[in-house]
Length: 309
View (cartoon, helix red, strand yellow):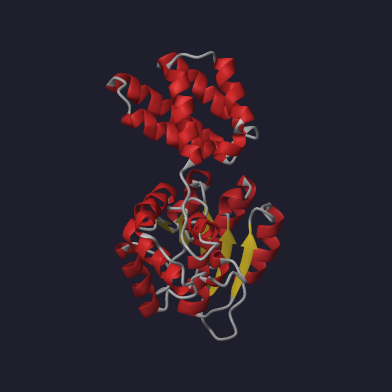
């Protein structure tokens, strides 16, 4: 039986470059920075759980071992924060003479005025301070800031992710039955690049000490919705089915749209209809994080799918 006195995601949070899951190209890049003990301004882009914040802290604490200021821009996003905290920290030299780092987590939440102020601060104090920023949505970062940064899109590779997950399971003495191995691979492939979700899920599925990945109920529900669309069932009946069964897909409308995208891709629809449907779904996925009511956004996409199919 595994010892579950803590969360896997915290127990196995990477602390060094060797720990973190990176592509070969990204690893070589960061190892070169470690040798030089120097970094440019960095902007890490990627979805939640892909390792942006962990990598930022590794660069600060393990690679450079330097003074730093951490700010979560979701909490402090205004121009006053940039003028006082950020600029105030950036303008002074470090005690040991090393470069100082400002880590701006979720920088895509910074206001437009705040970003304009930040651009000037980055330029003026580049001799003594570097900036590391993370964002989920690169398009929300203004172009002058993007041009001042080395942009890294984090996307953990499948093979390295599988190795990391298996390593965690072995350290926890979790038994992996042969019939579970293809299900584990499928689960990892489906949820990449959200490594945090993958690690959290394997803890949930191994609470008995044996890995037991259950059938993908959310995938089955997506199949049901797609079948209703193809059979031209009443739109209101489809919406009622979705709202009454939100637990079946964990109320994750973004993932529901993603699964519908794959179903359309694998379907027997004509190439023209497939293309139109996938464009509709991708637009719905893009808008998902920009609006308050996720269900309405999803249903709007389904209305357009209904018209095409």
